[in-house]
Image (cartoon, rainbow, N blue to C red; front, top):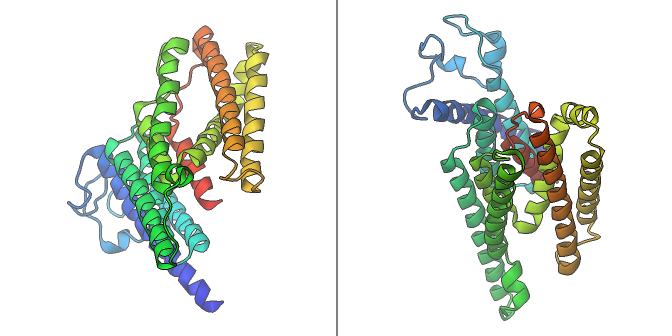
Length: 331
């Protein structure tokens, strides 16, 4: 037990340090600076920091959230990202243990934190980060497929490339996930032009969805996107519901409620393995119903935004997708 606590503590500290680096990536990507040079400096007075000013979380506490030189306030982003990364790394290690899965989960988590960080801070998603996420998902799928084939070969079992295997191996699922993610988000985004006169989502969100598709495969991606919609609306639920009630838009309110309820039931059936990967017909029917309900809700929402433009509030969708992805990784 004592050894486990020590290992988890080391993993948590590693996560804190990675989180500190991710802060650099987020901020320097936005400022178009190198993430390597120059050394860390105060963003206000530009004074190079000492090593003890860069200790994750602790330096922020000891410095009382102020620069050691100019006494300007340090952004709360620094300790939040560091702590969040440390916690996520620890939880992922507790789930996957010492394995290749952990390495890929940590890599994907780091990329998603950076993507969410730039999106939250400046509402910007950088293509490079999403391309790397897509690459990580594809590489992971290829390695998992190769390892499975090697184990089958070593066991002396003949490899049979049946239709089921060709359509359900990790590589195929990852490729389908990329296509599904890009298509779903792009169709929904462009539907905004018809319904509200503007894109429903930013172009970066399409690449994020493609990256999550590469990571999870198309089936889990559908659940992640549905969960992301729920998270997005929950965050802004008071404003959202207030606007619907104010405009007496009961049709949209009811349709959205049905969508959320079905998404919860659909996920629960998968979580408790009532519906499994083998139940292709059942899963496909459920996914189609979920998609239809989501489209109906989106159409009604955008119709309401077109009729009541004063209710428009731009909400970056990337952070909600990342939050849903973390839930999928951990659960």
